[in-house]
Image (cartoon, rainbow, N blue to C red):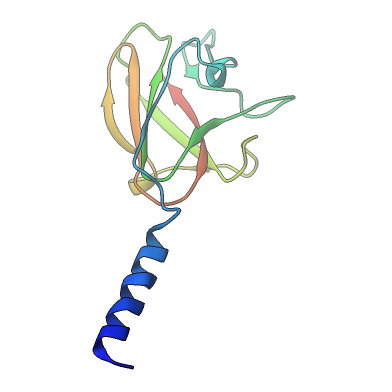
Length: 129
């Protein structure tokens, strides 16, 4: 192969590898978003974006390279935030998120912002105390 042919091949492979990668979007879920229909605050003062499991439970879509901004109903700045992730929409086989899976961007008395700095499409459940 000539140098030009190798350059064209390398460019094609590079462009092909770039298609389909996460976009780095910011997604906002407000209290009225359908994704937060099962969210609520327990009697103990713990806010959850959804129950662990049950009929029709759906965790939050958590795309790769995306930041999710989630409105919570605590009415105060949480003292603790936990993010759980799953490969399944219903939260099957969850694991606690850490590192690049759940970068805490900002938290206040109304919203929490979390970034998935990986290229993996996940589903998230957030609890705040």
